[in-house]
Length: 328
Image (cartoon, rainbow, N blue to C red):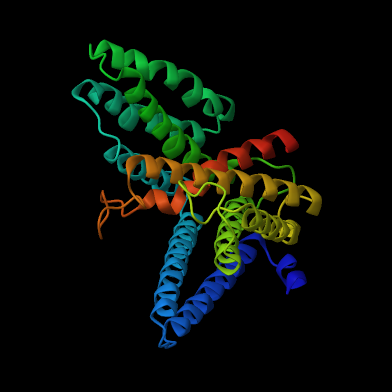
């Protein structure tokens, strides 16, 4: 099958991979459904199995949504793709700030973030100004936001308010904007950049799913139980290995040799999984289990940050590692 994929055109390769991934997700959904139908007389076993099934179902829903979104991004044109991810950043930042209360003095900074910083960042992606794109938010915006906030004449909790907004911009706008940027990199003799986006999603998501499953099977003591009950070093290393090996196996339809594909996958999986861990710490600080309220989303985005947090951390590290390795 691998040789057959290599003989296809770039468009056919990506389409075939989407079909394979959708098929695997469908198969996994059937397995989870069959597991949920099993009966047991032990109440503790039933409760534990119910929790496991719910967690697996949430992971599957996240995987379905991410793959579907990237399929839509692939079939769309460059402009539509950037608009799609721009709206994703908008709703993710809105969701983040909903759980980080703001004051009247923050209104100017919020307008700057949503209606100036966000469109300018994606415009820099669209025009391939990658050098400015890389420093626009962490340098210029990080200096501009506190200036605008100070001009509002509200010093109460000034540092905390600005730090929250800057952190939200960094994760939701800066991090996510690197995903469509992958499709605009100009490699010599390689024109399958759409696959780089799918490659990143596949390796990071496989790492996250593996970590979850290994933790459920081994039940090791968590590294930081006050932050995450599922983060253990053993499950983390197994997830890293699976994600990196998958990346090496997919090297033939990327511009990478297997060794570099393994290294880049390892870097992306490390950034994504540790970023997910950091976002869990933020959720504990806010006193919520997930980026949703009791049975409903805290915003219209429907818990978007829970679905893309690992990608927001992995994408910029993956993107800049590629630029450094290949000088593109």
